[in-house]
Image 1 (cartoon, rainbow, N blue to C red):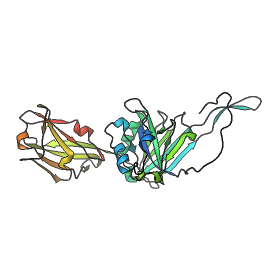
Image 2 (cartoon, rainbow, N blue to C red):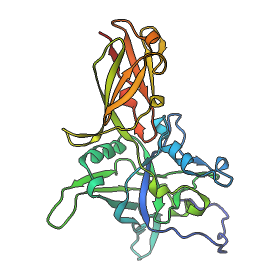
Image 3 (cartoon, rainbow, N blue to C red):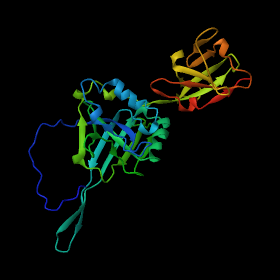
Image 4 (cartoon, rainbow, N blue to C red):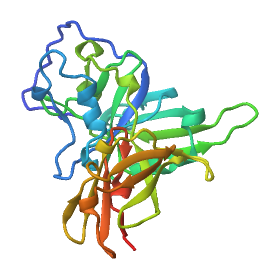
Length: 317
């Protein structure tokens, strides 16, 4: 809560046109501080001009390579409650009372059905490990955050250690769900809430989706090539969801032992998806690694996080 100033008077109370916040539809989790220790916020001086806030702008935030600066959109939510509790007062014997602090604002909502998997539950629990904030997307596609610093739209900070996620199994009278709840930081003030209107953007923020983590299994390793099977955490243990449709331009190869690039185009090379998520890779003939060389493949494609894959190497037999 903002403190009163000496010799303060009332603030002016004229009212102008302000867009109305609509019902919250989904939220975006954001690490509150980036790797440099700065608040992970939007600099509004860089987003001026027609058409700047387009799909590519927000896709870049979701696909940001630095996880400390990345946006993590959650699926659509239902039964959202976002309410501030009663203010805290001290009462005295003469029945008067004195204001101490504003009440805490609490948020809760449900992620439902197929989106509410135990896998997502585990990933959401990671939000307990770092200071986080949220941006709100309402049903009209408006982006809502906090202008705690002039010229910036910051995520609304969450009070650490209040982030709670519970999985609800399907019952006779309920569908599978994840119950998400937290409290906002005590220094977050409702009067600081601001929005970027959907009319000021060409992007539809309600369509934003978070990244999928990717795993890899290498087989058929030789000096001429390798087979990579790429899957996500979702699906079943026997039939995980595959990463389909990659192109040779989405992959780079490197001989770690010799610090030399391995071309996947040119004489003798090929890149084929022999089955969903299964990629047969043959190196350019003149770039074939020698026996016992360490090789690394690096994958990149919007919508996926290949961090685990790209940290993996294999040795040619």
